[in-house]
Length: 450
Image 1 (tube, rainbow, N blue to C red):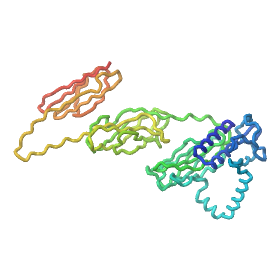
Image 2 (cartoon, rainbow, N blue to C red; image 1 turned 30 degrees about the vertical axis):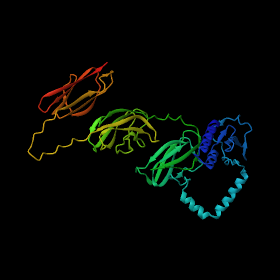
Image 3 (cartoon, rainbow, N blue to C red; image 1 turned 120 degrees about the vertical axis):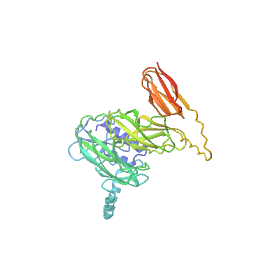
């Protein structure tokens, strides 16, 4: 870490203190972990109260006379023991010597209450834990605050989160960036969730680790910041972060405009392609974002999908009892909760089943044959090359329905449908209706491509 990086880290911690993300004690503790080594073998740090540079002269911390003129930093720490953390005067005027005296009295009192202190240490674990509150209580077993590692050395952050409301996920944050997520196998969470998350530091200097956990109400609990010192030469530059993107491929089932009966189960499958550079898998969700939810879950997990691959996403809906058109919108979400890519829809038309006619109880009288009901129309009869449009038809009280597209042979169809067509050239669509008496009636639509 050089002087410029250290000042950037100090300013970031000061912003966290101002917005309440960390306490004053956590701020002072984190600043004490900021150490820079110069070419003369001296240690440098920042005064948490003023932000001024201090250097260690071998016996005590001294304020640098020229704050603008700083020596050249070096990556390798000087030989010999590191200096003690800087104990400055807090705003309000408590001197450092008085703080040391108070600490000494506190240590004497802890010696007299040794048995109680041991019990407390056993109860809270090796590392600190977050204060109980609305979110989970988080305990970090390793690494310890102030631990030192080599560049490119892998560390394992072992933590535990507890909450009677159920812990749903544990997040590892390194230098205030989300680095790893452990999710409970139970969607409602579990009272205790344990995580062992791995991380490798590629750059030397001072770093921070924090573990955060959420319960099923999305309330968050945090561990105290853990300061880490990484020594050694910097490794190769890290690869740039991957990007998330996708495109819609097709409706595998239930195309838009499908007519269904009230109360039936609607099994919808969309097909998407991963056009980004991130692997989809653990933590990725297909989530409801708007429209009618139609008794579907809030989200479903996304199967493992590498960049360039396609994936089928399935959600089961229930059609409402009231007739009408219903649309539900869905989108992809990454492990950090960020939505990305296209919004796909389910669009259905709910129509009631025909009411059965009552059976005559007197002398049977032949019911008159109802006249056929035929409706055939197109949304756009003029489209550009490569554009699509939709044919609509509603036919009742007939024997058969056939559709012919241009010069292709005709084929049987259902009585109610919305059909998406994408002709490459001007095409005539002929709907042939075979009435109950066997006679045929025709309806024609021409879609012009120009």
